[in-house]
Image 1 (cartoon, rainbow, N blue to C red):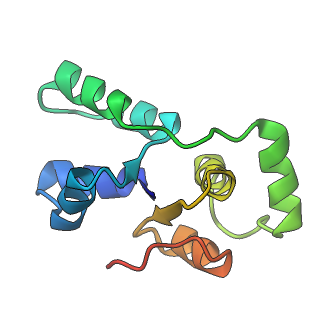
Image 2: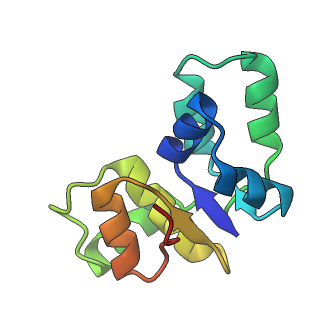
Image 3: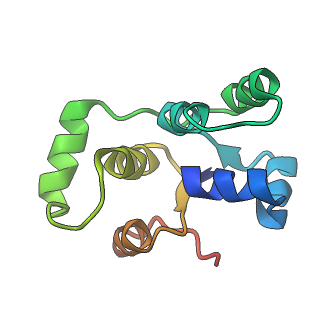
Length: 122
């Protein structure tokens, strides 16, 4: 499964993302509720339908805050330049079997690569 971060979805809403469309057709995409919430903060075409569609995508296991804190220490994620939502995505990717994170954010991608959970797409 592939967890596409908020930036991937924003890019897709601006201009259809062929890789994301392919993964969606293969039912290989998974979702995190923080991503849906971040997207809900923006301007969406056909807002109600778009959010409902996003909420129907199977979700990753959502990491508890204690798990996130332990992961920050275990992987020395402090001072890495990523935020709390990013760390939640990383933690949820780790605890959801066979899941990888797709991001174009340079810092988040570098951390995901170091943890062996990154999707290698431009």
